[in-house]
Image (cartoon, rainbow over all chains, first blue to last red; front, side, top):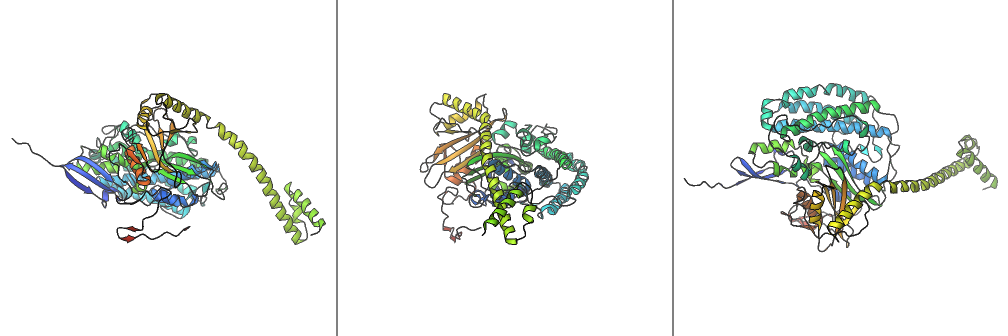
Length: 372
Length: 233
């Protein structure tokens, strides 16, 4: 019997492909149906974010942060505002802090709904996607009444927020939460405990915790691997230490700890925690003027700062160096999706071609934030 | 302007500062009244400036106290590094971050990751930095420990014309992409990196975009690059 020599086949997925969640190219080397190497090729959406920041004033940076992670723009605004405020030593009014937490948590729910719905779509479940988009739409409507924009808000400013809550907003958020909370059970019935879904995601693409940490993976992806790490709890910013919430971690319910199902399920439980935080914040929101602490001119003193916040995708950090002028001397954004995508090559080796897209979807990447 | 008017303004402003606005509002002559109001605004601003001048001093002393704990930790790490790798520090001063020399960075990185006192198992961020058009470049590493929950910043200066630094790709795997990004933007070469290519810009891009002396190329693939007007908003 002779030996059969098989060459590796190189296959390109993308840049235009429905399952790449944006403009991403995957250079895949396969041995038949088995993956031996995946190399993500990025940069198709590079818009020179950091170069722009060195040419515009501090307040003009905020719309650019919207466009980095357009799925969770509130959280990006939030992280940037918190960083500049710490550099300038601004103390914002209590009402502003509450408003920020409420909108950030609502945006986290909207972002997770998109992630989970699109993930169902990736592995072949179409219906949950429509259900989740229906509910995400209600959050976007709330944001529209709040600031006029549905996706790119420019809402959280340095030292405050652009608008106070309109009349009746708190009640509509309450009614949304009352409507939305039981829906999570519906999603669980529809998708989470669906046999086919479990077959596709359980025990697939296992990411051991040490690999996750070495690759700098954060957020739900890291927690899916069983590492209890959340900036909101471990390094609280804003007023997160006031709220009572849990950090869900993956336990390997449908296979091994750190598989695709765990990463998926952590997001599902996180939405419940976000509801909890939002309810507490709505209850405790004080009155006050939201524009009171807005600085007339943003001119941070000389110095540098590295500040992390928890976006729906993980540790979102800004490194800002100020030379005392109204324009940042250097601004670096550490994007959580960038590190999450870098681990793809490592964890998809040895899986089947169809699993690569299931693994990619479970990482919940946003290309706008990766390429910046 | 009569001295009577001056006197009236001074008196009413003093009263208004104590909270009695009627003193100004009751002035009958419109010109005098507006002058008094202007004087009041000026007086208030001066008072505010005086307060503001006092507070930063108080805040500063607070700010000096606050980073003490952090400083001592950074200093501890610096002392340990100096002991293990003599001559590896660029300056002895530890001001929230550690300034190192590039030569022993790879070994030092391994030491920081594996030493049970530090266990910096996570490389959070790699930031390139340019001090100015003809100054040095710098790479800044933000390390974090998932076990001990502490963080440190390490800075390494490099010569602009010979920008080479040891790669830590093998120490922290995320170093791979972070270093490629820094190379892409600053042209800093990470020696020992397995795939030192551009990551965000196209492969044939000319120049290092985030260096302060970067000039936009005039042509790209036969297309004229439009000039950006100076000072656009």
